[in-house]
Image 1 (cartoon, rainbow, N blue to C red):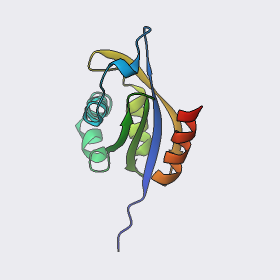
Image 2 (image 1 turned 135 degrees about the vertical axis):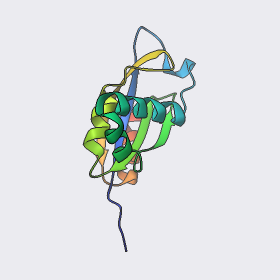
Image 3 (image 1 turned 45 degrees about the horizontal axis):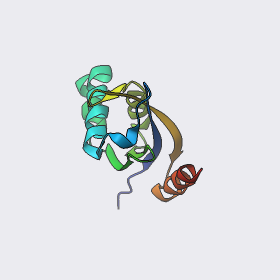
Image 4 (image 1 turned 30 degrees about the vertical axis):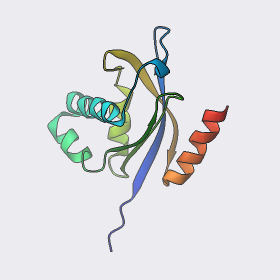
Length: 118
């Protein structure tokens, strides 16, 4: 039996220039394509191809600005670095702030719900 060892990154989307994230609809596909583009630009085709099988955007909430990204244990540092270089999604200037790195999505989800309440 093969066990996939994943890492879940709970991220906060911070919008610049006095804009509100709730006014713009950002989907999981928008976040995933921005991360993939950053992987291609910063790490080339090999970096994109090695990270792509495990990369998945599990959750995006535009109202609170919380996002959960899953990656493999081997590639999470590369994906994290690529997320750091994302500066805009659909011409909206924003940056990502890592709130938590977790082994289980349940633990990361609990921490993101605490962040949403405060």
